[in-house]
Length: 232
Image 1: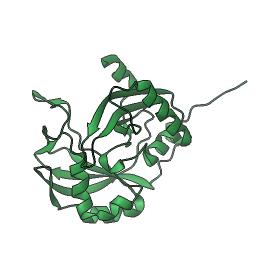
Image 2: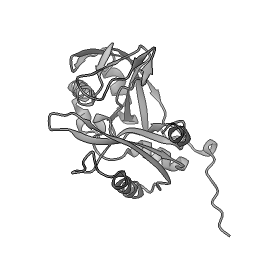
Image 3: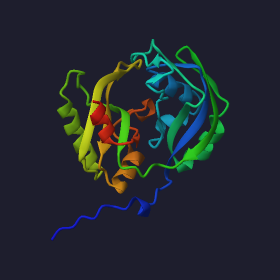
Image 4: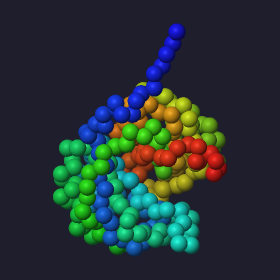
């Protein structure tokens, strides 16, 4: 007889060696594709982040539509309308938390042609949720936007396996390119469901693939894969 008992989420301890830092944000607009500009602005204040493997910068996320406003197309020339509730979030090793909480509040910078001021930050633990979502995961070198999604998922499964994470249910989104001075970086969104609690925490801690400072490979909790499939 084989009996595989699912983990009880209440028995899982969330480690604090990697945490999220959520900062208030004073900013009216941002380019839709702001990954490179945001990273450059923060690296100007904390250049050590470029050599810190545990640091990741979440993209500033704004709802797809609000009060009749529709999210514009992806690109550096289009603008997101940023509300006062919108946060700037970094994922960071615990050893760097105090430094970031001291260095970032009060900085004023430009992301593209949009002024941005960072406010007070607070620490948030990683999530126990077992359905996770990444808005951007960098595609393999040489992959084109027209490439079959199955190739992306096959490569993802192999990368996850190296982290001892089994890919059971996965959905990837359409290809988007992040603009950088070195050329565009092709990415896809990725939702993973039915992870174990241990796998979920490991994935949040390690991330997936390169370009973490550009918001790639950072996983956050999601309400579930059923909502995606029912609306797809």
